[in-house]
Image (cartoon, rainbow, N blue to C red; front, side, top):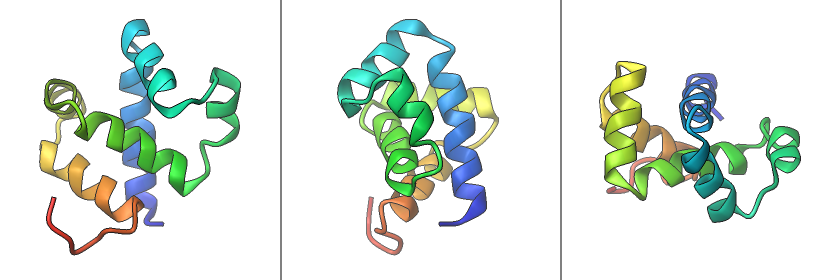
Length: 90
């Protein structure tokens, strides 16, 4: 796991949890509880799930990228790498 991808996923998670309805959607989508999410933050699959959550809904992907001052493609590429799909088409 690339450290910059993990850091990006954690920054994205910070943006997600800054909005309660969005955070609740993340938990519902992943099946995690708040405690489970905290406990699993160091796991590649959890970080991939955070970014996959964003890439699944373009308005959130674009808004998060703008908030983090990066391109949406950077989030999508990090998601692919964390999912082990580096080099595959989006």
